[in-house]
Amino acid sequence: MQKDEPETSDFDGVYAQNFGFVWRCLRALGVGEAAIDDAAQDVFLIVHRRLASFRGDSTLRSWLFGIARNVASRHQRSNKRKGSQHDPLDAGGDIASSGPSPLERAEDAEAGAFVMRFVAALPPKRRDVFILASLEQLSIPEVASALSIPINTAYTRLRAARADFHRALARRGGTP
Image (cartoon, rainbow, N blue to C red; front, top):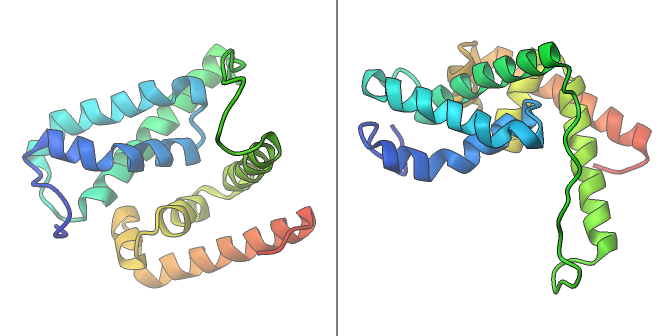
């Protein structure tokens, strides 16, 4: 366990320190905006049930990612069965804001959508490594532990995913 991780017997601490990580992972794994809160709740219900049996064979975040990956997969299968592939339109929003300009928001949204499309198109093994290493900034040993793969395999998959990203970015007309 890392020094900044809460005691694994303290569900509230695990939840507070890792909710953002789980939410981002679910989003990167393709859970739609409309279902992401439900998926996060599902993850933490599982965590609550299984936290006492967490042995520490991997880091807590690695364990959480594995649960999030399974929940995301289940939500996607459920959506395909139901035929609900689209998120509802956002009905609200501020009319006047002191935040970023509409152009900046559009550029950020476009960049985010590009990354999400790229991640969704990656083969699953590369996608998992890319999410954990590039988006969530986990170390390669943590990634390897989370995915139960050799460290060299994790490095190889990350290198391949980054090369794919640079090619996709070049096709888009951007720079890394």
